[in-house]
Image (cartoon, rainbow, N blue to C red):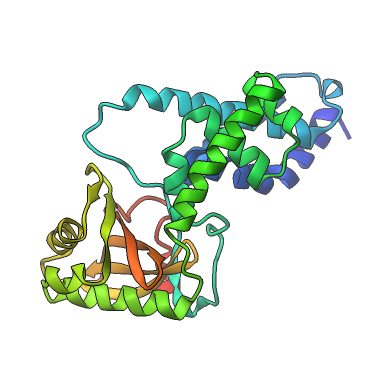
Length: 283
């Protein structure tokens, strides 16, 4: 078998691993797939004999491709609002996290707040367990500098995880259902009573909001006009899908801590590819 043909077969075997690496780095299924294709294009242009360890080579190149994409995003900081990361939405009866839920929505939002080099350092070392010296190679930095980046990212991510520390799915589901019922009733006061005083709302196209009353009022505004709420898993955690006349309209993800909702995340464009797995939601 020619070397390039054999290498192509090895790449296809490694493709899922590379996608799983690129997704938390970019927060987008489409961009992750594009990054993996770009890594393949670079591989296809070199002599197969130059690659001693294909998995290691692809990890480094995919990481660099993702870093380049993250750096380009920094030039778009003047946008009026945020674009939340892609999430997988699936029926709660499906038995738990599915194809897109190795990384929860809260973690993805926290990763979006990191500087590009911090994000790459954290994902490669803490999620992908890549040795520090290889992470430094991806970032083209010293090992000492890479360690500092990873440590800073780790602290910031830990803060986000602490804001989503509720481990009981039953408690999370109860709060989510009560919040959605209050929103459906157009009752921001009842919705605010379920939130922490300093609760946050992150929504596509909007600057973040802070404060229980403001969050509740915005959620009521964005989810009006006769919606229906379907309990779903959002990246493996209890959430809700808003539909209007049977068409997905808004995805709600939640962070929960100590019996209160600490953050509401509204994905306002569920038409994004791979965001809503409609076929799993039943009739």
